[in-house]
Image 1: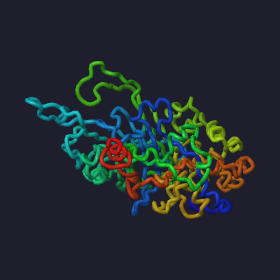
Image 2: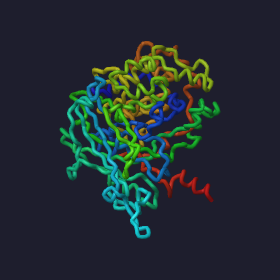
Image 3: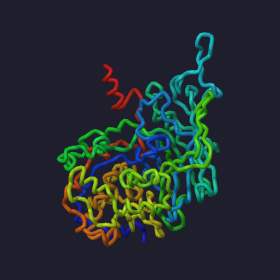
Image 4: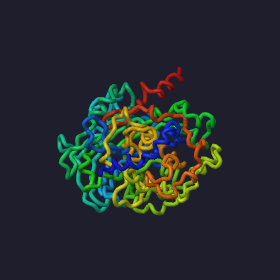
Length: 530
């Protein structure tokens, strides 16, 4: 039987809970931006969001899209150097296609910065001398490897089969010319430098050959608009908003998205489903990491050129990890956040208490205040199923090892962008419909993962699910352990994730905000100067 069929049968008891659909929102937080003490000081290797979904671009439903974002909260005006990736780091997207909590495929990205003019940089005549310019551009930019670019960033990708360090390496190549080197577009400096950024970025979407796969995939690496919507400052100030606002569903979208003008850097892959699944198992698990060398030596006599002060040596050390959104942000205890970022899914048993006995519901009780609103069905088997194994009949592999990663059932058909339910599987179930392709079954850009995840944290799955049997959430997922009818289920941050604009085709995330010439933030800055 197709894995999507039992879900519909098992979820029949949920029809009575349809009224919850309009109020199933809770306080939102940034997905994984600056979530651990160490990574706050290393933004170039800070993973912010990870998406994995069946492609919903017309004609591409036999593909799965993977998007890993890095470098959080980029101010569009952040020149003159902007936000190139770290050429001393290793960025990876991992896939587990047999449920054993170990990577079976890893896509490893390495970057190289090159200064123009054979390393001297673009020079301009000044008096009787030729002198290197101080900017990354010397004029308008429109093409790949444009001659007006002072700095070019290129990258290569290795597909590792098996263990990420000891497995079998294979080179990803350009399907059009066989090259192993790809160009990353410059960041969106502004409309005077790059008049047509969408057109310029589109020239950096590559058809790629995937070793052992008879079909080409696609790849894009470059700056994109921040896709996350959140009332960031208010939420981290102990949910500093009037209770009558954040418990009124009609006021979703009342506040502006404070990070709407920020950008991120994305690593995007579109891969044939047949080349990333194994045997008859349609569920794949995915997560993204970043690693740096064990030793960094700062040269006390730096040389001319790019990044000539840092000499990195030694083994790779993982410093960032992201699968399901919000886990390290609001589930893992502060003392173990750096430890989680350096860990692998196969060792996640060490973090079990944070999932089975979460503290976030108790913190929300204190902050709002909402006394007696936190569920008491300990251990939280509903959360273990949601975050560590996948939901039975939805996205749980046949032979699953409990571990934290994003899981996607590739046999569930994609849903066109316009028809997607922003609350994913949960919203689809409560409101009715045919959208089973959203979070936590993978993650699409439009999915309001914050609301969905925190609804689950506050017992929303148990509330909607009656006695817990329909979703296989465990016998301890009982209504009497969940404070039904409390305002905890009506909470939201008054910012609407569904209002965030996205593309309906690869690479899906919207074009980045320009540093000057457009965008609300840029307009406000210009107005303030007048």
